[in-house]
Amino acid sequence: QVQLVESGGGLVQPGGSLRLSCAASGFLLDYYAIGWFRQAPGKEREGVSCISTFDGSRYYADSVKGRFTISRDNAKSTVYLQMGSLKPEDTAVYYCAAARRGVEDLCGMRRVDYWGQGTQVTVSS
View 1 (cartoon, rainbow, N blue to C red):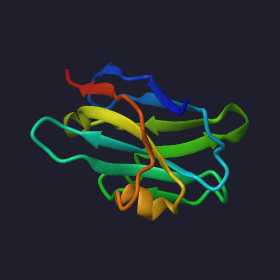
View 2 (view 1 turned 90 degrees about the vertical axis):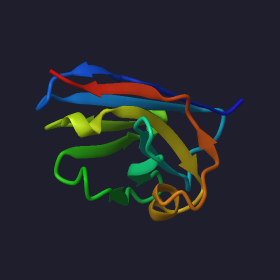
View 3 (view 1 turned 180 degrees about the horizontal axis):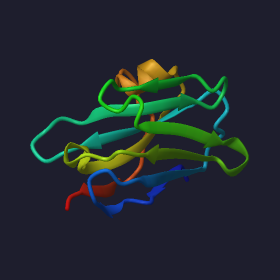
View 4 (view 1 turned 180 degrees about the vertical axis):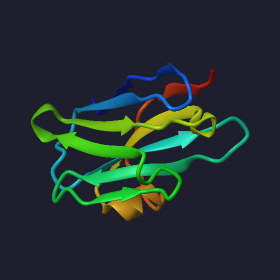
């Protein structure tokens, strides 16, 4: 059974940090891209950051460049999203997703094979 399980969401003050984790199971990560998406109320889901488990290539949305860092631990089948300098506009449900394609195809949602259930991130004072 394929699963992507997110954890690490919560409430944080503006300027603060959070680390999200996405644990994958039920499929081999080789040649997959895994990434993070977010959806705020009333807005479309957007790709935030994606990473290739094959060559480590990364994609970041312009809105998070310099503030968020994506990383992977292939031995643990886990992908992390370290979020810093958080802003209220980062508030959203964050989803993990995977596709057997490149990082830009995944983050551009041209193909998504698996989705996680989502974790809420709220940035507020």
